[in-house]
Length: 253
Image (cartoon, rainbow, N blue to C red):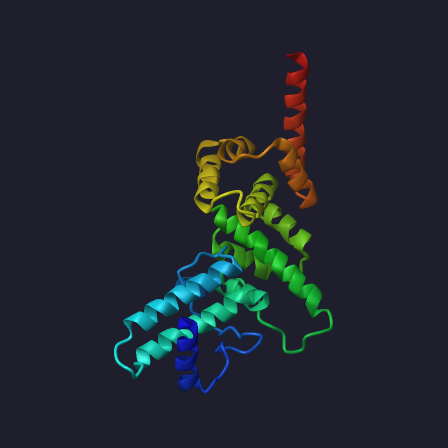
């Protein structure tokens, strides 16, 4: 009912009779607001959390509105909520918004070729690598942006190799960051824990795998499976060595 009221208000303001103020495929502005902040969410909010946050903020706006005639600020605020909701619920527009927030979005080419889907996949993978390094506090946005510009035509695997060769991170650090991001996305690791782990690794030389095993309930076998399925070769080797040592200890005891 509250959303219906919001729709009527927004419809009167925009002339749109639908439940959304954006088109079926929302268009992200060239210099967008942070839609996560508008809805009070973090980068990893689920679609369900986006919808709940949207309704909560709409209810608050409606309850705080004085008089029958909506103010111009009320109209602007509720438009922002609808746009934020629509952009973050659509996977394609959300990915584009994330690129812009990270300052890593490549400009679209006006003469796009039929291979654009392949390029989109490469960009998505590169963004995920960059995001992993930023979450782990292993590289800054400016450094990653420079690397992307220097190696713009590189494939995803080549880009990862370039990050190591340019000494932005070591191969093990890169694999560890990618694995940590994956665990974060699956809800196995909290963002605060992720940062604590990598600060301990960076500042005190704590072993990443040891720190991870202590922080969350996960086995070496599961870590090895994740490393294999995501082609984290350096981490695979490190985990395999650790498993061999564990098995050797078990045999001798």
